[in-house]
Image (cartoon, rainbow, N blue to C red):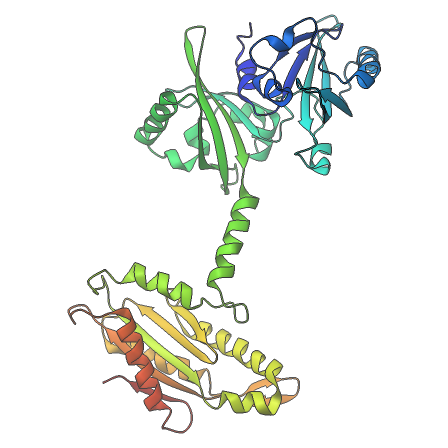
Length: 414
């Protein structure tokens, strides 16, 4: 019945959609609408089936009258529908009139939002002037062979920072860095063709070069002897940011915002092979503050926390961008150093760290001398098999030797 690719989109969209005649007679209901109301096949089109709640049928007449009077103005209203089993379903109706070239209303296009499952505030933001063009998802029709963008909705070109005419001159590989080669694009198309509908995560590149993560629902369709890709693309930046926040919560020390022991374990698993070898030299510098308990006892734990935050900043300022500063717990810190080929690099960084404690910590009119005991060890390529924990223990042992000396002291493990 419906051959236009837009109707294929309506067919696969998870949002219930209705097309109805000016008289109100139901012309078409997509699978999502049938599922919402409990119908199968064509039974929803039977003459004795009325999907609107009995108390809202007069409301339907008022809606049609207003659309006939002002056909260019879409309507959004809450109303009730009837499930096949007899219970009411409270919904938000978004409806627009479709006109012919003479301005006569020939059809109503409706989108139904189930308010029992969708937040009303979010649903209130959906005001259609056209079902597809005002979707909150980017919608593309593309050529499978080359990825040429043949059509798109308003949200698609606006979210990417283009005018529509500009975007239609590009291909999907132009706006998606995942397909930087022809082979990658053809591999993706083959996987899409093999499945009726494919959902996967990808990304889109805006006109200014910024890239954001997306969730893509795409299908391969044939229309009048030609093949097309029809894609609904959703920006999932907010979800990814929330996931990243949870990762950081699990892997960052809440006080100093340094990586914690859990992150250190993951880091060492990535660096050290199962047999205890490394692809490049690794160094470890263990730092423990001297008499930190005395600082807490004399000045209070709140100021003690300020000292720890200060130390974290001092350590980060002393190391390279490729190194990691880990808070091991309490007043103990560990620096992991990659690319160590000799002791010169270690000595330089260890002394740079020690220099951070040459000036006292100042806060709220108080000046506190903070010193540290520093233990250093390294694993060079060719040194044989070492366990990561063994190297940390060596740096820890050297640090305890440093504690026997007054002031900030550096000891290399021997």
